Length: 310
Image (cartoon, rainbow, N blue to C red; front, side):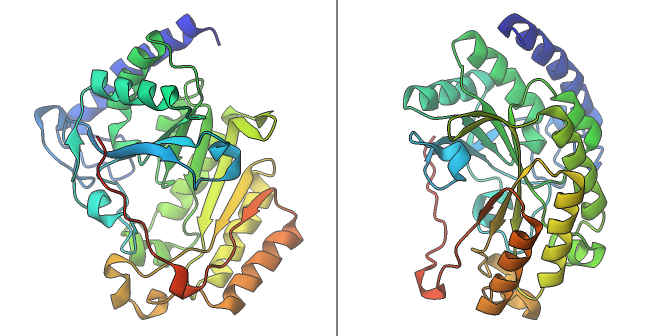
């Protein structure tokens, strides 16, 4: 798509999506609060966009990290709020810096200038209208690298349809495939069906496009394996194989019982080696494309401690 046509498309989507904030139904929570007047829903966000940090991330999947790193922007707040979130300090609480569209565009352009392979929007769902408005400015000022939509997977299919032709790479979680698990750990019993529908929509937008070892367009589905739920992990991998066979799968084994997870007996520990081996073997048997993260010994898990950098 030519730049002028892409900008026109984004501007149309910005107008449409800002209108949804008046009785906010951007995500499946459907809070119906007037965020344009500063009211806050489940995600904790009002009108203002809040950024916690932005930097060149060298630890994402190889296909988006490349040599320069992924230009990662972590937004504060979240519409899912898992009880084991490693980034709970800014996902469950709106800690960070209020940034306007010009400021966010500047962050994007600065990351590009530092050599970022792409712009990686982490937890963007609740700020989608504001992000797209900033993207218009950034594109007009020379942003050329791919845009990565890095999401929990708790997305409305109709909203994902609105960003077709705008987003280059979808990097989505697929956390649960059982209502009880989703309710227990994320207060979202509808997560499995919601995620399935949104992933199908993402998959319909872009077949993989590569430039050497770097992904330029496509879909990466992440699954964080959690303790005591091996069969559910297998169910998710089977679904991916059947429904999105050309998607890349990233199986993550880094789970730690952060935040409130210590109070839940089934998940108050790291993965057992036996659980990891079952999931790894199952993914190999399915011949899925992508990556399975090595199991990291518990004593080497230092956690994630991002500091505000904006």
